[in-house]
Length: 463
Image (cartoon, rainbow, N blue to C red; front, side, top):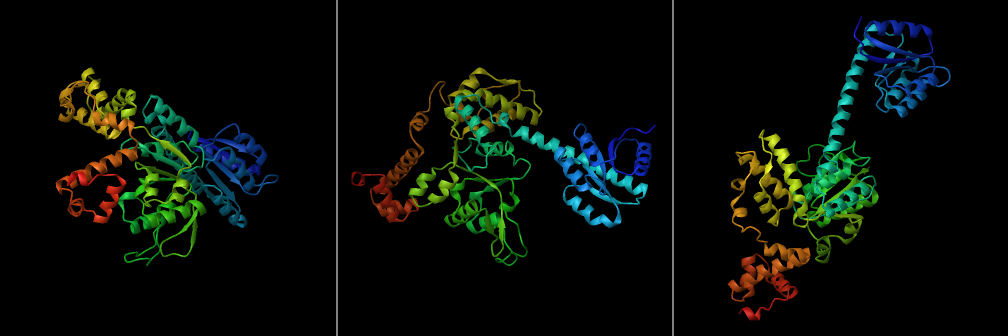
């Protein structure tokens, strides 16, 4: 007796077709279920899944197209082969556009039908594997990969859960290394767009003209070197999400075009005249205060309002130090597997050093440090001798004063403090001569003069 290969559902109103297919498929190791009408077939599909369905288009009562629609509603992944007479080939092609896998004409050759069924089963196997991989990806970028049990992180998890299913634009704000892209991916993977692309735009990595070509695409001959038409990232992200990493670096002209896409859901390729509709959810990230950029006329206020529908502010690691032990364990697990090392954890004194540090590079800096420690470690525990010298030079329990000051300052205050410090140093070296100080800083004298006034620096006291 042949090995069972799966259940084939035959839907046809002709008894002779039932007899022929039942005998043929059973002899090849398939289990066969027979239905004589569309109504009967849909009832059976509602209680059982089938490896392959053979569906006749011309039946009394519900016709094949209606049955196809009904089966796809019950099981969107159903693999359906249409059986059709020569006169209704057009209908069979229409059925394929609606999701049928293939069609075969009556009278069919047995070998031809068996080959189509085998191919359909291979297709089904690949389909199931894709679903499995997508589910694995969902888990990878679900909340469990954004590590944290502290109160600030619990609030972030709540925001992701609340905003992911919506269509709203998201603005993620946080210092470098806080995990902005990871949050963006989690939002995408927990939305109904997860089956479609998540496209990352590295906004600051390209000059404005090249960025526009990447975003909107171009037609042949749009500029020197445009030898063929190219689709842009917005088209790639259709029905999915497009993530702008460091949106603050997008040029002013490109900001205007981006605003139009957000408002109208359409754009034109560079050099083109055809309007292209697109449905892509925009998620943007920045480590810069956009409102300060607006004051300096470096960022469009109307674009900011479009982006700032829902804001997620990621806390720096120094404000969620309760999460450090959890993050350390997570990164050790990753890099010990990657490097095939038997490392169980870290010593208490190393954990104390890590908890005492102010982490200007945030979670990314901690991850890099743990990867280094795992690679260098020669024992089952990460010890002091695997840490970089700058951490060992710090006295135990010595808090970084600069980090303490940063806690109580806003980003704008920190930026002004740094600018003031740099300008004061340049002015002291130039003995108060502004033109000389401007040259050393690479600034125009008028620009330096405006900054001195804005930062309220007393130049007379330096001469």
